[in-house]
Image (cartoon, rainbow, N blue to C red; front, side, top):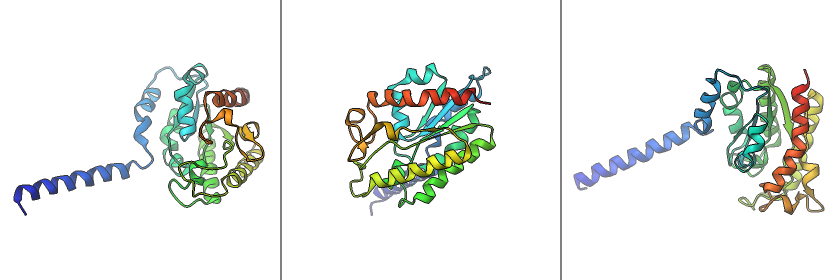
Length: 234
């Protein structure tokens, strides 16, 4: 092989390896909010009644499409598109606990069902949500759990079957756990479901999973009173 070509090939392979290692080392995308987390942590004036929303693209898009809802209410969005509850759990300390919020709103599970990381196991996904709640509680952070939004398919994984059943089953477990622990439960599901197909009402989503602005407005109307009451409770 030509020495120059060999050298260039070696450099290219080394570069690809480096990029691969960097990607693997930040599997949970901890860097996504690192700068903003540091801004909040280093702010000498603590944000009063700060509430962190942790989630996937549904939370990520919410903060982007409806930023005033977040800024007006001292809410912080910590959603990352495509993530599963496994990844939430890895970044929970840096994206939630380190900010010392008054409360955390945990919403996730649809990407677990879609098998974005692993084969779906309801027990494990539910366990991830329980673990986040336990970490929050241990750090004096009020826990607010939410339902998954209604969905009967994952458009990027049409091979995944029985999505509506899986959503309903996980929601039932989250709701029961919230009741057992005395945690507030935000029920988006029952107010956004379309019958009889058990998908999300078409006016609230263009793809069957992600809310439109109209969908987010409904979610805000459901969530805000519960969050406000939670902050008032001792």
